[in-house]
Image (cartoon, rainbow, N blue to C red; front, side, top):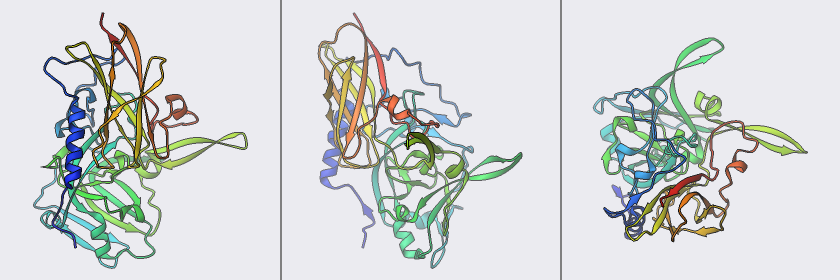
Length: 379
């Protein structure tokens, strides 16, 4: 029997505090963040644009403040009324259900720190389509098991309230944003129906009143403004599963390159250097974050110019789906321009170079190549 609130353990709290301390990097008033030499300023925020980047160089916290967390939407931002809201759960179930927001909020509560990245996060805005937050809500698995998933069920489809226009063979029609998960993944204990972000009610731009949080998966799976869940007995072939957010990757078969298409799914191993700081005593520190699909992160290394890979100090939070802050002291760097890059390693993968990551890939999604940064050390 679950309690009404599944909070963090004492160990996890202590690890979170340690991660926060390293993320802040001991920043003092006199510490200076150096500008990147190869990066234009991020585009300005605009309510008329469906995208806003997180300026990772400004993030000194373990979790990204809600107002700085990246935003991306495809069909505008719907305005929903909490009092009139209902979540409909239907399809291949022994019984169907409609829940008001108050009924959802009364269910056992669970909190998870989860980092997710937009599958198209590559270069623009300093790879700022990624964020880490503490999400609060209720476990989807509890509801699905209570309703009884039928043996023939294959996918669970999640429909948002946001609507966009889809065109097909010269015709256009409105379509709701929808993504699906295989039943086994939807029944994972950590998939949340979330209504809180960093201890606050979801804002409208982040999916108020209810959104899906799927730890370890790219941002497209985190359906906002969630209104309907349908369990189906077939593979769901909606627009954002079979037409958009599809990775076309080539593999060598008998000496030839054959391209195969897959829907964007679990996050790939990645790390990014986010800033370099200069302390009053003329010491420099390289900061960044690393993340993946929840697999154990073994190490993050930093290379300066053509030098060797150097181990970075990691701040492990105890939350397997959170990002991991890292830092590396840079002692007495030479004046002038330098190239910096980080490489993450987990139990199964090594973060590839940018060239290796894009080899034979015909689409921009799921780009996890090493990110090279350039910076000028003042004379």
